[in-house]
Length: 120
Image 1: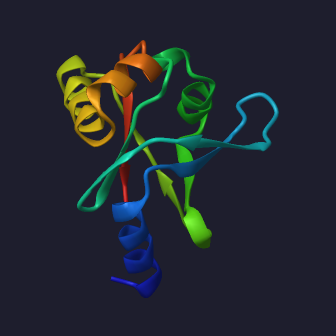
Image 2: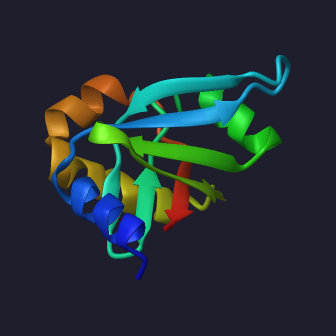
């Protein structure tokens, strides 16, 4: 594993939020948003707050290239994979509840019909 990858994974293990950048499907500009995530092994899971209606998710559907930035400048650019199977999405929701608490996930994620898998 390259030092930068090891540094990124170490920071992901302690971070509660990352900055996600996607390319605007209409504007073509880079758009960045802070998002919650779950990191397991060599995979990052993302859950759009409004499910498939979330703007960053719509942009991701047009171009699956994602830039992931963690505090203090560690970043990587990867291709994400949509998760649309309801049982797999439910698994991601459970991971989010385990990390952030059931109450906050219910409060901030009213629609959970999709998720994103990001190989690191």
